[in-house]
Length: 273
Figure 1 (cartoon, rainbow, N blue to C red):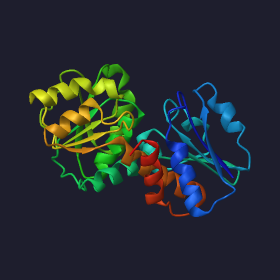
Figure 2 (spheres, one colour):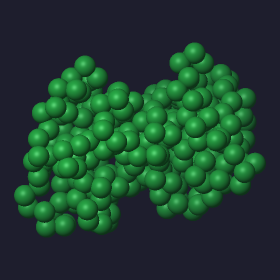
Figure 3 (cartoon, rainbow, N blue to C red):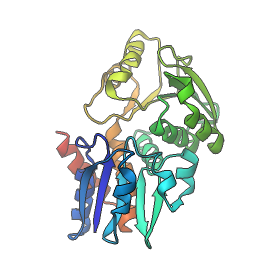
Figure 4 (cartoon, rainbow, N blue to C red):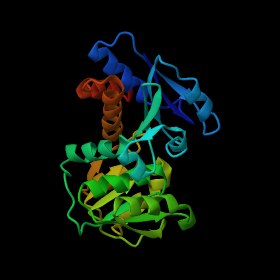
């Protein structure tokens, strides 16, 4: 059986390492997993080219939203989030799933963040598809509201729509001067360099989160993660999230429980420990 991760750019992806480690640990010798450069224009043709020998696809930027109208079935979580990072081929049909949300929840749980009270203060940096998944994750942890720091409020319509579907209140704030100074949880969904302004604010004491999830996994640590760690903040990196969302994909595509620790070891080895 075949599987792959699609995105643009995709050469940096750690997904092949994680999925291949899972196949090896599960004894799935006939399975393969590759990285395919694919943008939104190429996506329909790539999907059409996946025949009965394909188990599924992992999707990254910029495909998580673009794939939805190309699917036969979308699971409720992916529909609420408005993004699918997984396609499973079953019975000749395309089924869309979102494993980013449970991946975030599992990554936070490993660091001891297992729940957020309704009044908890959450600041999400960014407004893209990953920010929508972050919104669903904090809602799943019990938060009733969240603030999103975005550069252009006009481009946050998908995030606001996801909030309405999920039933969580979303307030927008300026990216460079967020209105939240002491969030219980800060989730950064932006690239490493884009989060530097938040690293500076933490270092100055202008921003004092209790917990940080930075979805970047390479290069690691980011300036944001370093500043947060030095300030005594509980820091969760992008690798645990990537690991657990990949484990969810492995389970969906193979029908077997994912060997998380074998995948973790392979991923850490590839990242140099």
